[in-house]
Length: 164
Image (cartoon, rainbow, N blue to C red; front, side, top):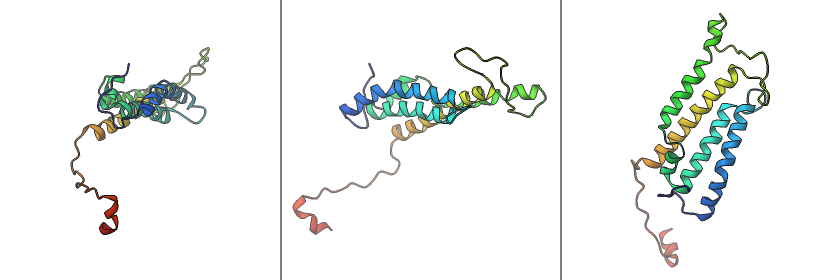
């Protein structure tokens, strides 16, 4: 069961729909990740879909849920993604080719297809985008407001023309 703390919007409909959307958005993000090297998609859009699934839970149930779904530091996830993506440019350098030159396995893997360094680079982008976007969303929600808005005075309905 997803824990519930100070949700941004206390809505039964939002909580119910967000529970249903979490696995769907995560599966769609994985699908977009692996389809991206041949068709539209890839690590960036896949990462945005995955982080939007986490952020949707955060809006429905509160910021602690984003830390509960993936209990790691999101900056470490982003740094891992950058390192993992950059790592797959090295095989080309070792072969005497330009950095990030694509390499592909000679035989396709049954049920998966052809695997190469562009797919592995996309996985790095995927984790980078998840880490950065989720961390930004957490900072926006968890940090106190530095410049609070002035108090708004409520005006009774029968006196609105006097205020305008």
